[in-house]
Length: 196
Image (cartoon, rainbow, N blue to C red; front, side, top):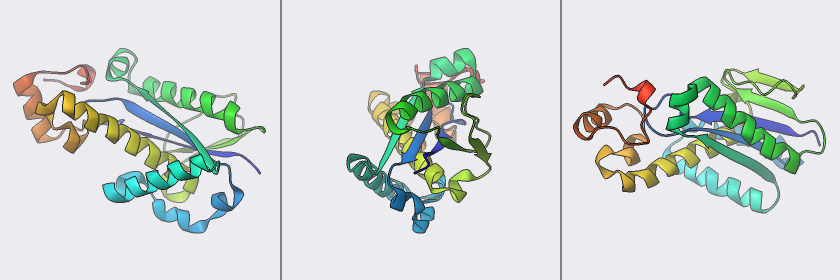
């Protein structure tokens, strides 16, 4: 079976929290070829309930050895230090480095969403615009990245209850900006994204 790894990121635009990248691979040929998996679509277009259902299913497949994935997050401090694009690349490289030795005997084929690129040593790679809507393996990576990051931000909401992280997961909503003005920034906030 040709190893096909799907990669997607979430958290490029928020003003708080990490950026998160998932590398995902199907280890079961039947599952990889299933057509109705495309209903998973882009994680951002699914309801939260649906995303969580998919995540439970994906974790079950992982336990059964039908898929594997690695998720890497890069913190707001690192984003401030090196910038959002290098931070995404750092998370992507780390996810791939961890996933490839444990899942792939052969040179993997890598499918990436949007404008993402794998390091040059991965000869077989393809960047696909709206890849999370076209390829199941990217859609799965998208779901895992989104559920993981959202879960982390909800956990942080208990630490910083004034900011409403459980609602906006770090995106720059009106209520979020008002909270920053009132209470100041937390270590989760990306200072380079905020002009307050």
